[in-house]
Amino acid sequence: MRGRQLARVSAVLEGETVWSGLYPGNVHTVHCLQPAVLAVETALELAPEQRKRTAWRLDGGSGSDDQLIWLLSRGYHVSAKGMSNRRAEALSRQVLRWDAYGANAWLGEVEAPIDYGRPVRVFVKRRLKDGLFFHSYYVSTLSLPSKGGFQRLYDARGGAEIEQFRQDKSGLGLEARRKRSFAGQQGYILLTDLAHNLLADFAYYGLEESPMAGFGPKRIVRDLLNMPGLVTWHENGLQIDLLSQKQFSAELAFCLERYCLGFAERLETASVCTKK
Image 1 (cartoon, rainbow, N blue to C red):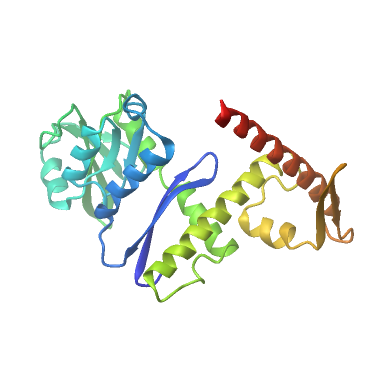
Image 2: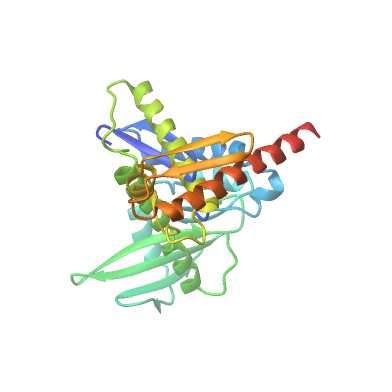
């Protein structure tokens, strides 16, 4: 968004947003990491033993030495791209053996350039582009059998988060809704997160195993939730009436009934657990 940037932490498999933070456009990504990590610890109630089983994959914007040392001091694992291009070039001159990695790319391993407080492995990647070699380096605490295995794990990052941003922009108007006030924009972000998570919950519990199971937020809002109808709770149960001429009306009525009744059961179960 213009003049501002949004940091987000997502539960990828569930498609839900754990935390979002709004920052001025001139704030570097590296300064967004620690608030995001602390917010995730609070939201997921991560105990020290759970942190030892949690890995953070970071791109170059967050991979400063101070941030990596801070993460490792809190017990996390990391799979991170280093921030310094100058250091990457220096480390590339220390590589004794290059192993091919895909087309026009090679991987090497070197000693850690500094003390990170815990044992780490440092990899250097060499790419050939337009007749020139470019280098980047990566820091990892993960135990993997090969350099290629580490690089494939690192390269798998980011796709789901990018897709969620795209869906929120098209389905929930994330980019179109702007407020001049910074606090007002933060309010919009929180409302978008709430809508996003409600749609993710509905997609998981309501649309599963239906013809609409693959719908993202845009199609759920445009093709399903815009359907004229009425949902009524009464003493004998739940009544759902939808405009029958609309596509998916019969399927949606079944999904809504299943979701509403299941949601009520989940609330009742949560209440019982709370009382105990």
